[in-house]
Length: 629
Image (cartoon, rainbow, N blue to C red; front, top):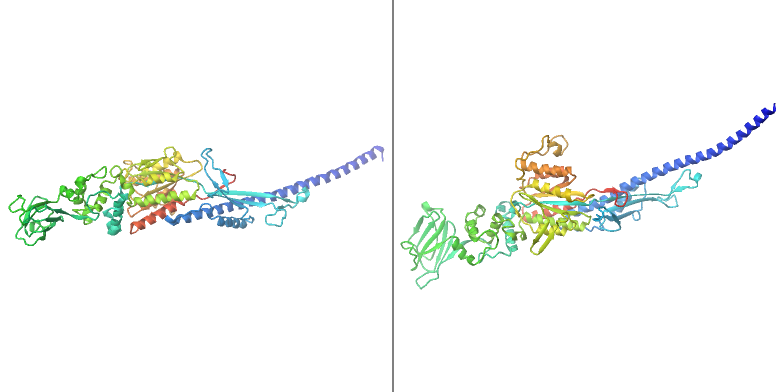
């Protein structure tokens, strides 16, 4: 072999030795990368599973809080929400159970924590303060950080960790779920029908005792008003004649009963002359005894008596041949009989004469059997039906007239519930009748509230004070529900907080009966797009009534703006179909209060309904960083 060939062979042998060594080092590096990839994949897979478990556990735990709130909302006036301890134990247990179902261990005492998420007016953000109640946030943490890898929370063993000097890895994940705060606007019916259950017309449905007991409560709440000597229970007018001037003259009392009179005298009767409202007269002669009842006979049978003359003893009037003392059933006589001439009418609108005429001519009074009687009960009915506005009878806000008073008590419960709950909700108030308005100011009866700078406020007591100082027909009579919903939507859109759930509660006892003149739904409108409750492609609610269509249209606009709309209808006169449809399109709940057979039953049902709606907190949402959704 030549020298050159031998040198070439030696160089090739050296090269083969170098490549072997290089390959060995490359194999070590390749194995290390392979081990790293396998263990990294294991770590990522495990952490993903832990994160998913935390998400599910946090949502499940927070649902225990919402369930507890909803349960509390079914308690009516007995609602007592202890927000710092709502379902804490149940939430811990639920988080542990759900995590375990996903193959992840959490310690319910160590890994489940609670906090409060509230709005910061200064920053416009929603920071979370852990450990502070009332609790509306739950955080669930999954840890694998124990050195003993055999423990359920032990570090994750690595398959090839020895190759990189790390036999196990520490993993931690967490998730938080919060109950979203709400911006709530109550849209309440202030129309005239909201006092109907306290009027004589309600006797047929609620019973005479229930209605009249309630009317006495109203009378008492008014002061009671100074009606002179007029009693509360309606009575016929009794006119007392002039005191006798000598021993031959009688003392006479005449009670007018519309179509008859009762006469009592201290002397024997000689004759009685009746004068009817049409001006005709009828005389009864040849009488005996000191008392009697007289009514029209023959042609005059059933006619209303407005005046009479009673001849007894030596009295006389000179009004006709043999006519005795004259007695009248007119405005002057009623005022004099009850001492009203010296008493000013107590309110801004109305008069004693107007009230007296009302007692004689009103259909409700007649149907109740009280026509031509006078009393405080009828005065209450006069105020409720003829002078119900705040500008007419301002003190009516103090009285328990229904269903308005039940609504007021329900709204008070609503405010109290939100206060006890402490979840950061804020509240506004819209009223509607013929028109709608945001209720934001009060300055009367020693109360002053001004919400003009914060129309949706966290100070629920201010809203409550305003609404409690209102009365049925406060401004006007009819029911413009569509205007109320529109006003509520615009209030939420213009004054709601970013990050809060806009929510509306619409309440009525009647039918939408006023709206824009000639309103019709936009072209292409299909009721089935909004009211297909059962999903069969056909509408389950429709109407061709323009006022109702306007109300529903405004509800659709609210829903399209992301507003949850709850509805509450009360009494047999409410349009339950419309209220159900509005709640359906608004993604809310509809609660119907049929009213029961008594005022007390209706009020109890109304309290429960307001409590249930107050408790309809939004479903929990996940948040991964404090205050960041």
